[in-house]
Length: 268
Image (cartoon, rainbow, N blue to C red; front, side, top):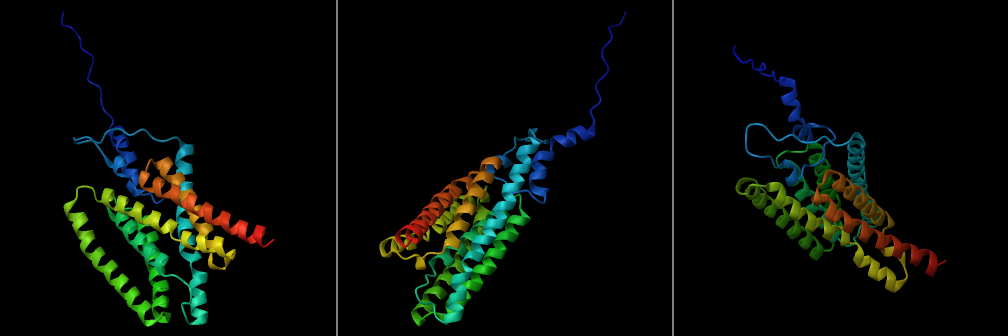
């Protein structure tokens, strides 16, 4: 009598396709945030390794904080508008500093390059492209109403930014194996500098007991922006957003605290 063997199992094509969905969904979902280098690593072979699906509650929370991050980032761009409006009305720059506008422009450029790296994230690219446009508008007003030496400094800064971007971006995309790693590290450094930029006003406000030089809108936007991206970074396991987010929370909280102390305690 011949031994019998169980018939070979039939594999459902839909099942094998579903195994590859988590990595693919991270790049194609309209609400998908930027994917970190760790999330993009896959073992060699034809099929990607199965990825465990996050709990629905975590997925909803991740999307919620991602949307909040977009909203508060735009709020951060617009929080600088009162300063620029004052320049427009007075037709002079006065005591306003252009440094933070330049740093914010650099931050938008770097993070847009991060979003363009594989896999590209269109909403994140659009967010930073909008920021680039807004900051260029602000800097254009600074350029119009600054003194001659101020105009020279702004022109040189913009020329250096344009030249560095034109050279660095093609080199990083062409000659590095992980462009997101490069742009992520640079973006973290620039973001920390951007978050800490208004701390100069904190010192002058504390010494002079006058909140006139500090914008509560900017401080609040920095604080809420830091909270949103830190929470998203933790849920998405993306350190590129978690690290600078902590600095945004800390620096924003310091500015708000100093503003409240000087405004309501020293001046009743």
